[in-house]
Length: 577
Image 1 (cartoon, rainbow, N blue to C red):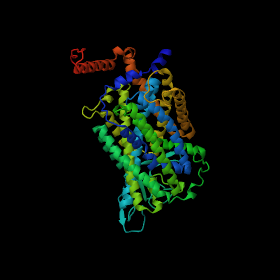
Image 2: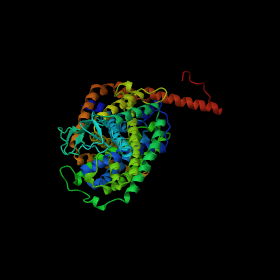
Image 3: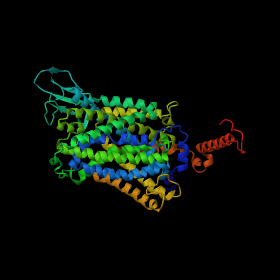
Image 4: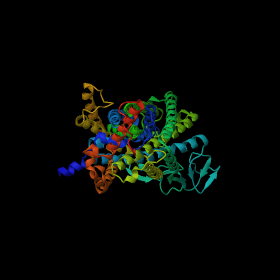
């Protein structure tokens, strides 16, 4: 039993992880500004433009402001621990790599498998939300919707869908919406239909319905961004920087334009009386768990550590600064949103666009739609960027077939995993609703934060002499005391938010995914792991090929430098290197 447990919790030394990572050929081109923008690109998007509406309406009411404060506090603990580990182990792989170095292979597999789901469904969820705003822009600006059907009568007076001057008879197809949605009151999946005559509930027998069939705009977005990510990281970062600047400007315009229209009565009651799992204190925690979906952004920053020019300095700056800016914007947007419209009336689809509509500023609606299109597009980009690098790191360690570790010879990007991620995200975006996808991502993000915080706590004691470029609490005695406290608080708050939210259905779905992961691990990964196949590599540095190569290269560089400087210790070049 001891031998089996030893194999399940075998760890990779930090030196080995870094040495292996340096052989991958990633281009180090990202500055702290790029990393901050990537964090903002991943955090500011669906949380503001999509989930704020459903979280306020279904769970927290005006208390959604408190939900974001709670989510921000939990994220702050995690941000500090991520910063310490990403500066200490600046290798792609994020929480997976950190966990492998601290908690062992089994837990690293669990979090890696969890992150695969997390990033995949995050990209799909945001693509669905992006599709909603994409349609809203055409409706608000040109009066053109994306529903099609066999019978159209213009100038009649029978039934209208409220989007054009034409009236429709018969069944309509929504080509910008998935075919199913999550129904919160019944806790089940239902057909995504709405009645064009405003009937509620919309019965299946109603002949004038518009039903989602496929989210085509969201699918097109996933395909386009996958191509961009294959081409190169720096190109993707430049695109993201432009988009982030644009959406921040739009968010600030929404905040300052909406303040004068706030109705204080809309804040009453600030915490609605509980109805089942809705509202009350549990509703606030449920809202915090739902909007936590947004904070996957700074986890994504850690997945590009190997592409940072100076990761020891720039990674902590990018992670902490992006969290601080985004949390402040989230709280301000929520305060304005629930002040402009009663929380029970805020729609789940395109809530910010609908809310600004009460001001009568038609031009502002179009601007918000443009900001949301850009903002949600950048979130999808960041999610599609992070997942392939997790996939790639697991394949390098032998936990997945080596085929997944293939890099593009020209663009130096993980081409195989990028394409696979793009294809799966495209399918999910076309078929699944944003609510289910977002809830899955939120649980996964919290689980990752829990394990990373635990990793910092363990590594502080198992490898306490190692120098940490960024150390929570500082390099002195204060850091020795404060660091473990912050890490412990990160563990407690992350797991506490999962438990207090009471989101049983999502926990079951994540449990099923993890059960599949256990089958894959014990059926393949456990036996093909590099640690299992080559245990001598990790016991003796001289037997590890990457460490040998690193030492060989370092020696060659030193000899070359001495020769150029005209030093006495001039040795012949190493043949074949």
